[in-house]
Image (cartoon, rainbow, N blue to C red; front, side):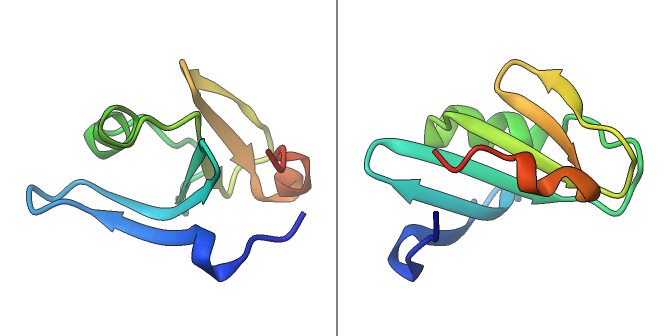
Length: 88
């Protein structure tokens, strides 16, 4: 499924929280963070984005070899497995 440009956003607050990519389609809000590390950690920005935006999911794309759950509604996704991220 392709994302229309009208569904794609960058999100940031004056307090410094930010999200690299926000996809909004209907009532579904999905966030994406891109990390160069092989072992990403949940950050304050991620928690703020989940709460403030009411995200359904937050995917953390990283340089490691494995995908795994990081916290409720937060999933680490290896670059090599990005094709497995659900489209809805």
